Length: 461
Ligand code: GAP
Image (cartoon, rainbow, N blue to C red; front, side):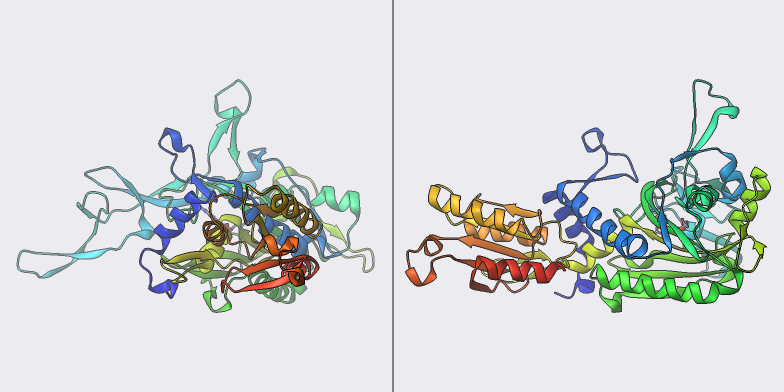
């Protein structure tokens, strides 16, 4: 079934994630906590595989990139300098009747009509999605999205700290440390993966809009004259990453963000949008942050954050290109584009067509019968052999073989390997061979263990 045609796709993905141990609602036994989710045994591996691939492409595979892992709690002056204390807010309105709060920019406004159906052009209204009340359009209140807490035993304003709303803050504040300790030549970048927190007015769409989220961010420091070239290079890199994690190219779109919609620090932004089941929405962002952050931190901290080009003697504040990728939105895009249903056998079969590189399990090994010690021993041996290629080789001897295949299909395991009596030599010509089943087609081949190893290696390299 074409996935865009399936109105229940999100429900099915959420249900599969719970059933198969990918993603659970946060604090579920206490009724949950809006805007939080927990990654389960397969979800955490999928997420780590995405992050590992990102680290390889955006940090470790390059000579001009450095890593940091900065503290989530930072001196609140960081967020004053960055403009988040004053301006990181969403427009908030409240339903007059049920008091449910909404983001004003997510509402549909319409003109009120009088008794005769005449449109009253001076009276705009919106309908509360919770209780159906028609509310008058009013000037929204600005609601700051940073989570506030207190450091230490005092709970007064002097002890206020914020949970970081973006990981970028910890990169800018370490610019000087990286320059002083490693002496990188410009252009160079600093990469970080970590949690960020936003008190979203209306968290929604599963792991799309969260209050606790994870980001993979790069701040790439450049000479101001080089910004267009660097912007273009990172734009291409983001498309390469989308391809590497298996997102279909035709589901990823670029949106040139208009000046009025850009963040306060940006002179150019491209949103990478993805065709989620609930519509085309922002997946990642690429921004030209100019020298906004380093200049603001220099002014506020009184610590010089300029760069001396030793070759030319020029001293200047570097400008910044920032590719910013949300991990959770990436995982959701992967799940949504990989979800498949077909009618293999009697019932509908569900599977995740994950790219083998990011699939949580690379293969599953199974003895045909779990009560035959000789089959189990051989299967254990085969699994150990395949684990020399990659440790994530699952073991499954529960239920009949068809059930085991279906389970692995839903986890997105690309290969299943079955050890049967022919492997042990019941048919002498098949001795030492195993059955290799392919997830997407259900096709089976008879191969030697060395051949199976070759297939797995080729798929994940
Ligand atoms: N440092 C730049 C920055 O934070 P942003 O566009 O606000 O820019 C970057 O966020 C990325 O973080 C987004 O493109 C998205 O992938 C992710 N993101 C932002 N808010 C999110 C939320 N509430 N839930 C999940 N992911 C979010």
